[in-house]
Image: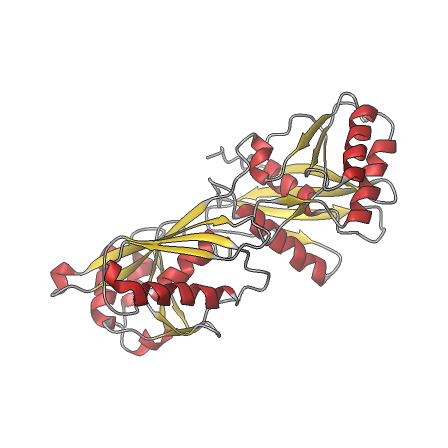
Length: 371
C-alpha cells in the first residue's frame, strides 16, 4: 500500500485533440479514513459524467491492489471548446498517478486510447477518423521534449505510419504502446480477477453451522466469436443440474448491467457442499465484484438470500433466518459487510443490525440488485 499523506495530490494527463491542442485531464486526490469512493467528477454535462464514471469503475476493477483510502476528483479542461471523447485513457492515467499506482517515466504524459468495457483492461483506438486525426496532430507538433506518450496498438496501416511519424517528430519521447492497462507498469498484458463472498450454511445443530466461501474468478474471452464460458468446482459431479442453475443465474443477472456485461471465462468454486438456494445472492455478488460492478467490503462480504427473479434482480427469502443471524453475529469482524433479504426484517433479532455495528461491521437488507 502507498503511504497516505494528509495533503491533496494533483496530476494532469493530456489527450491530443483532433483539431489541435490538448484536453487536460486533471485528477486531485484527498486521503480518507476508509470506505470505497468513486471519482468525484467536475464535468460539463450529465451524459459525460456517467461515461467517465463507468470508465474509471471499469479501470479500477483491473487493479490488483486497490487502495480504498482515496477520494479522487477529475476535471477536464480544453479552453471552453466542446469536449470530444478522447479522455478515456488520459483520465485513467491521471486517476492512477494521483493515487500512486502509476509512476510516469517522464514529467509530462500524453495519452490517447479507449478502454474497452466489453473486455476490461483492454485498450482500443478511438473511432478511426478521430484517432487518426489526433495522431496526426501529435506527429505535426514541434518536438515535445521529455514526454511519455501512451497509445494502444495501431489498428490499421494509417495508424502504423502515424506512430512512426510521432516517434520521428519527438526523438526524446518515450512512446509506450500497450494493449492492456497492466502494460502501464510493465506487467503482462492480461486481466484476471477473483472475488470471495461468504454465506451461512446450517449443519445438523448450531455447533455445525459455518460460513462457507464461494469464489468467482474471471478473465476476458477475447475471441471474436467467443461466448461466456463457465466452470463450476467444489460440488459433486452428481450436482450437474445444480451447477447449470448457477450458470443460468449468472447469465441472467449479468444482463442487468447498465453497460455490456463482457464475454468472460468464469470459474465458480465452492469451498464445500451445501443444500438450498441461500448461496445465490453471495454467488451473484462475487461475480459482480470480480467484474468490477460492485465494490468489495473493507473486510469480508457475507450474504444470504436467493435471487427469486433473476431477470429483475429481486432478492428473495431463504430458510433459517434466526440461526443464520446468530452465526453471522458471532462471526462478523470489523470491516465486514452483511447483505440479507429484506424479507428477514421482521424475523431477525431486533438487536441484530445494532450488534453488527458494535462489532465494526455493517448490515443492509436488500430488496433487489442495483443496476
